[in-house]
Length: 270
Image 1 (cartoon, helix red, strand yellow):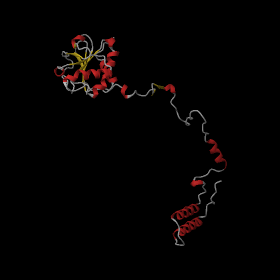
Image 2 (cartoon, helix red, strand yellow):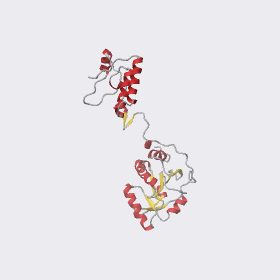
Image 3 (cartoon, one colour):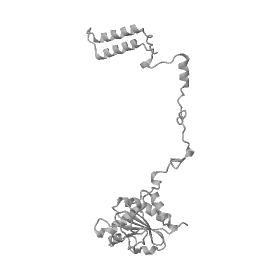
Image 4 (cartoon, one colour):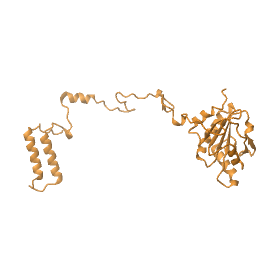
């Protein structure tokens, strides 16, 4: 049982009690420890203030008010999931789809980013000729082989980090839009290794990425890049079925959704 403090003292009595307590601490009537002095000062302050409190100065409810307040506190749940707080509006499972709340924007990687229109010398012009070696078959492959089809020509290299990011997107586009005649050509822009190691390095990269689209390389890569006005990697050219360069993107796309949105420019509507 908590011991109750005496009722409030009159103002004069409170003042005298506080002064007496302070004097008892400060007057040299005997050695006192700091802890003892602090306790006496606290007791004197409480007595002087005379606040009718219980533990730690917290006001106590009395009579029926205390009973009503206690009965208003909900009992803790036993077993199962915790109960929802009053007034809360929990999101129902039906409003959640694919891990996101219905009506919320899609994840950033699924959002189409509005890009500034590209500026390139070949945009709106006929695509230059391109003939290089397919690293998988050893055969010569030319852009002319895909006449009448939409073609994505991507210049890349194994050491180019943004190029690696785009590889799965390029392969996925080739697979998804094959029925619309889309072709994807990956042109190696040059490896920073000894020439005799180029083919094996590219082959290992192709295998590690699971690529099945034509990957082209050759000693003429720098001449080809000059013809196509490539100034950095990655650079992607979207070539329409009539052989015209519809769009050019230097530096890569921000995400797959934006890449596929741009590809739509060269795909047939049917």
